[in-house]
Image (cartoon, rainbow, N blue to C red; front, top):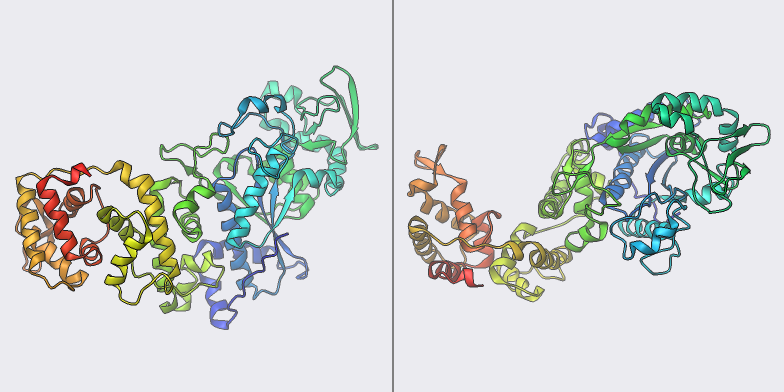
Length: 553
């Protein structure tokens, strides 16, 4: 169990009352749990569970389950005025056999002899303190969850089976073997039905997890008999870690053994939900409340897979952005399929800081719908972010900054009194911006060569900027930028109205500016960027663009 404690909640009558009607999805799920336990002993903890299959390195979808479940847990705590104890368990199915070798391990050939062996027996190919493949992946997951501050209990399936904590349910599964088969067989094809068993024995001769039919299931003795890989018949007790359950029965058995009240899982589990529920009931449990979320996709729109390693890892996201931005991405529209790749990071960062800085001024009803309330479990920090992440990325692009000092020189001039010491979150973002720019923006920069219309527009913009005072703010600069485009037919948008009643300015003007001056198709508000970068410095960029020098950088 982690040493993290649960954050203190605002349990004022106003806050509790607002929670009763909040439309934020964690509150909607939490209200179902409140109804579920109405007639139950209030001293019995409400158990939240997340499952993890350590067949590959943890990815952001894995983290998302814990983050989202924590959000529902916090909402439940507020709804019940924190009077009912709660637990969050992260359960790792690390006794599962390694069915295939992941693509993203250092030496695939070294793991081939361990195929079908429990993941806690497979050697750790990454080196380090952990001896097994599952141990390494479990440690990675826990390290991140601890860093983020989640309060949870980690349970290893291997420990759970071997310690005897699963014995009662396993013996019940032997007694009710036929009832389990009655649930499972209709879900299988004819060929699979002939060999199926909910029990997966660990071969005494090879150590592998065996998918074999049962020759005998003895309820009185709590044993199963099967043909081992060496051709001999073997009888094993189902207790003590000799046997594990197939993944579908295991789902329901785990719910029954632990008394799980809430679990969420991806859409790919949706078709099996009824099976899990039935198995849980057969084994004497009550199926938990479910929440089915959409799957994350990679940049090609394909499902993220731990074994393929085609999604972002936890460490990759945290190389370029704060963990809170990741939690925001998990909070937003969990039932909508979303691409999870590097391009989504800048927007997530800026949206997080926008939500957080607006939080204090909101009425309590809106605060409970603000993602930051759920990200921080009700304890939202007070933050001031004078420069957004997208702006920092453009500042790195324009200044070719390679270290924080260069960026801070611009920031301090733009916002006097703002330093790395007074704004540590901004200083952190400065480092992220340099890293993100170097790895993802710089390699793809492509400056457009101005045509005649664009040359004339840049020259007029230069003249407009020259006429402004050096300390002109972003709004004044933005007006000057818009004035240039209003007189150029190419950049007029008849669907918009300008201040004189004529056509407004189209986004094509700003797209052209970013392509001409920064080598990218889009960016933040241009006037604000110029105010940060500097009028003199922006004019120098324009001069280089007109001289064709930016393409040589």
